[in-house]
Image (cartoon, rainbow, N blue to C red; front, side, top):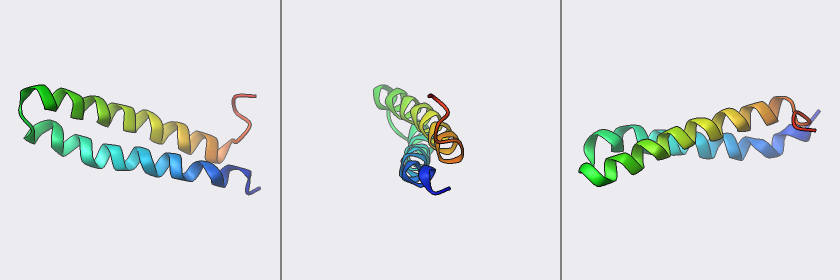
Length: 61
């Protein structure tokens, strides 16, 4: 039952990347806004993967 709890920090790291990346993509100058947008997208992917693995820990087995 508690096997997926170790993946919650992965979801939290994804949320943190999105919280930083979304506003930064609009406020930073030109070359850095692209990196912030990519960080927000990576944060979304990381968050979804963390939630998936927290709910279904053996998903990729």
